[in-house]
Length: 350
DNA sequence: CTTTCTTG
DNA sequence: CAAGAAAGA
Image 1 (cartoon, rainbow, N blue to C red):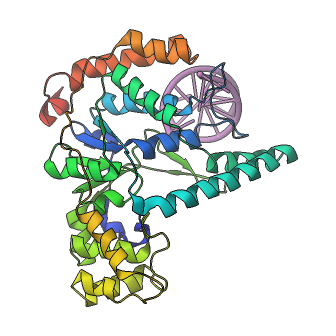
Image 2: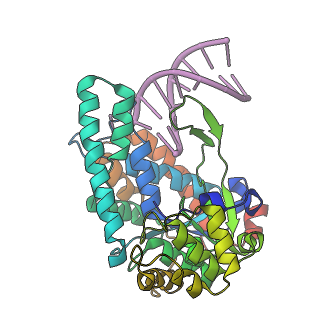
Image 3: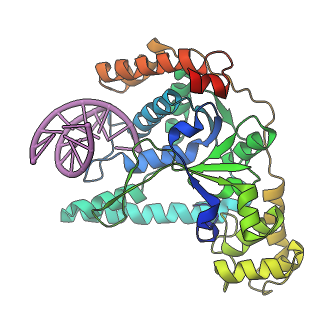
């Protein structure tokens, strides 16, 4: 879910770009966020995901494989960052998610029984769960493709933001805004190829392009500091204090944060009894100083055709011709865009 | 979601 | 060729 920042980000702080504009940049991508999106989106009209002959779900592998190839073909250098153990502070949110999934599962079964196809799809998507097997196999596929990935000790968004802050990545990539609170200098959203997205509940589609949100620009437009942005997030709600503080929407929260420059004063001003200011302070400090891993290396290796085929074709019944064709695109992109240290200029002039 | 097929 | 529908596993 992530922090409730959406409505607070002014349109002027969002910059729409073509995927090509990101050519040559390392992007630290929130793997969980992306795999989860594939798992929910890649389904038949009735909600059934893609599955191999043994009934194992493969939607996430299909999405990861084809999207990664599209990215590197455009010169983008993806590094996938995987979540570690969620912090204790997240347990309430994690439990709530589990509860919602169970609820959606029941509704899904009821919809299937009733023959309500569209409804079945909706609840199938809501009940989708990323298993540890799916995560491990995604890492295995990335290894076979020669694409680097990094294991975060805790939150992937925190690790990705750290890598971007250090300059090892140009930006973080996720649909969520948390990495901005964790201090990422740039966030890229909507990292898809197909610029088409279905409007929820309607049969309409709108064009979606990647968008860049620059932290410095965002802070300037809002007239606040990063510390104040974190407090703003806490007022509006994060995974660690879901729901935020009652009575605060985007406007009131921004006004309060700006009127009391000292972040601690804002957190101390919440109604006692209902909220624990000490806990909120802990959340604030977590965003400022999360656990991260410093021992990672971002190396793009030659893709291994046999391994890719073993995983996708032999193990999971992907179509051999399709995989072969896509692999060829990957191999070519590796030679032309990833191998050796290519500068952004090389990327533009070929 | 991405690719491939179908259609105007 | 572009847009929409269908398939992918």
